[in-house]
Image (tube, rainbow, N blue to C red; front, side):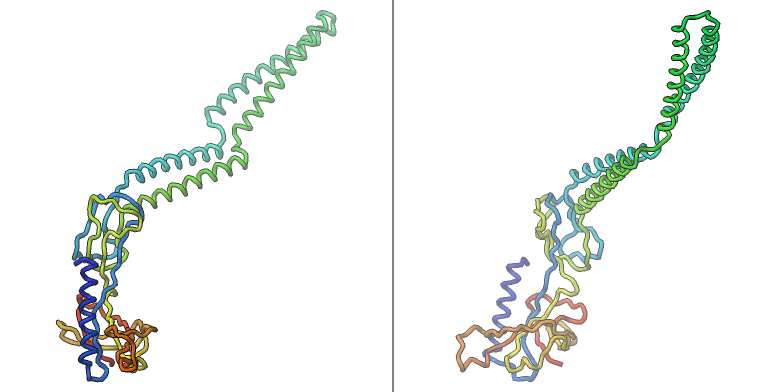
Length: 320
């Protein structure tokens, strides 16, 4: 039965019950007429999409964690894979900045260092030889100056290579490392968000209960927040009854009452959960001094244990 039909059934039963109260009031003390009502739990899609899988049907008993339905997820899956690759890239860049140059690059620099040392030794020996010849007057000053310059250039080249090796062995500057770390953290956060979005495409039940109605079906498109199915839980059933104005002082929230219903072998124990703070007529009549006794307050009670009572069932309420 759909929601509208059920609401109409409850309304008809309520009016019949209220008319009975007005026309044939119950003379027994502490006995009141009421009916069963249910609060439905609506399971909605947290995101828009097409329903690809519907794992339940009407009447199924559901346990916590059970799969209910799945939305299409190709776009979300692609996004997760892209962000996974981006995170791996960010981690590799961060590691590269922390470890310095590769060993192959350092080996190449060290080879250049050996060549520079050999060139420096040769330049130094040449300088000593030319300077000695210059002092003997056997070579001109220009040749001496060139030998001295070549030696200084060999020294400078070796120092440059030494410095390059030291730099290659060092990690990147702290600011660069911090920037790389922040990039990794951002990539990780983006991946977690995308993974959460992907998980939202598969809906599982967070409660135990029974599927009462499928509002949408496989192949339909649903918007975010649109209910896909309605469930009943052990806490869904409540008893709604009406108490004359003069008897209201006998009730307070938390009081125990007994519910007598057709099909039940024994009274059902319940506790009052709600008392209306506004008076109403039952049935609706124009207020006059003569109709004062028809003013009632609506009360609601919850059974202390799970019961299987259909919505709209007339019941009798007795104050314990």
